[in-house]
Length: 378
Image 1 (tube, rainbow, N blue to C red):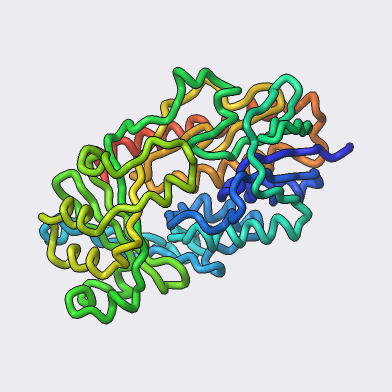
Image 2 (cartoon, rainbow, N blue to C red):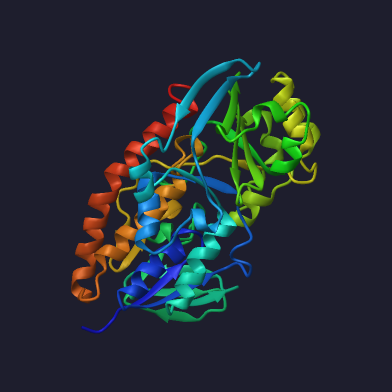
């Protein structure tokens, strides 16, 4: 059986993950990415045990690449009283197969892309895809070139240019359904450990800690070989909407809209002094703000030989800690279904099976994330 010619649009986490699995099946895979520096954008996220197992199935050890295993998570009220403690990875045997870990996006991306390129995947960076012709299974580039394939996989994120070719974009589009924005920044762990105010709550027994109250959260966990803390501060969108651009420039805007330290401190002024101290320890030029978007279930994820995955078909708010994990699971599911002996006529059926497998799981995660955003679960 002849290998498939597969185009993947988007080189985020799920793009190279799918490419790695597909090239190992013997297919010819090319990734098209609009950015020129594909691995530099992004902060951190949690990888669930099931997604960690998926990565290991691809030969990727996230912890070897700098991700940090979770242990006990401590939750404080906004005023600093302990609310709850949750133990993760308690079963050592299960954790070996798949653990809950905190990953720094540039590092995991580098692992996946390196393995994909070494496996024979081709990368075309700095090339913008403007649309897809689903009838002809071809992508249209900004310069007017048309490139055909046997399969097109859209991994181009929340602002997908391919989604409108699959479903009605006037009806199905990402929106701020939870009513939240978020600030993100990184801070050196050694800086925090050596601070007299912060040091008492930083230890190896509690890797993740958070403050919650007044509809606001500050979530902190280690990444980058335990060298940095990733900090995410969620809050009602009206408190920082003037800082958030509506410009559609995808990930570059989503992760690089600056916000001042004064704005952040103003929103969290009523929080525990220890939390305020953490904000003040950060680089004042390092704060970024973005609007939290998700999307209702869309009627289909594929059309003909073109298929969506990750944020292109199911952007999720971060309150369920599973957005990146769902994208990784999508990638491994697709690469599992598009076997080395799959025939072109079988592709639409494989995509239908992909939707049947993935849609119910994503729907559960979406609903849990929305509930979490309203304080109904932690």
